[in-house]
Length: 142
Ligand SMILES: O=c1[nH]c(=O)n([C@H]2C[C@H](O)[C@@H](COP(=O)(O)O)O2)cc1CO
Image 1: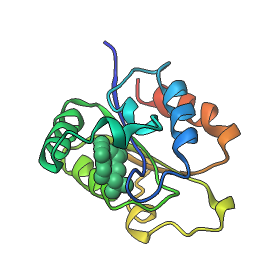
Image 2: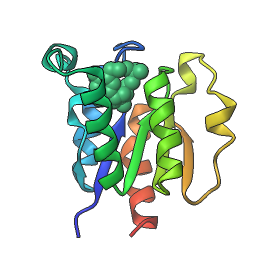
Image 3: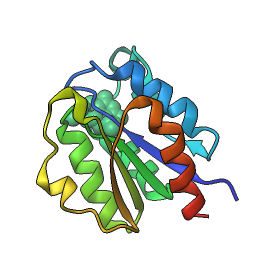
């Protein structure tokens, strides 16, 4: 059975990390089908310009519903990503949040404080550690 992975990353809250999202999505492809590849696409906002806000929201909620995992890059704080994380918890998805402390940012307590060592994992990381983190995360989730 192929896993379905919903990748979440900032769009309107700032695209500074968009290239990193694309590289993480590329790595995640080894572990399953990534339903939200557009999050790493530099022209996402242009491509979705003909969609209404409701169409974007409803499409993403459908993808979240059918996914097994939510992987969120949470360094760039985003309302949309925070919302997706909350909805994923409600839907009983397994969640992995990735945060880069080297940026000097501080992760919200509402994310870090939700860690439970099984279905909600928060990892401080550097990009060079992502592959190892994914390997461990998906091994434990076999
Ligand atoms: O155009 C969009 N397409 C889209 O899929 N999203 C979803 C996926 C991202 O993980 C998340 C980003 O939210 P925000 O735009 O608030 O940073 O919301 C968000 C937007 C714009 O808010």
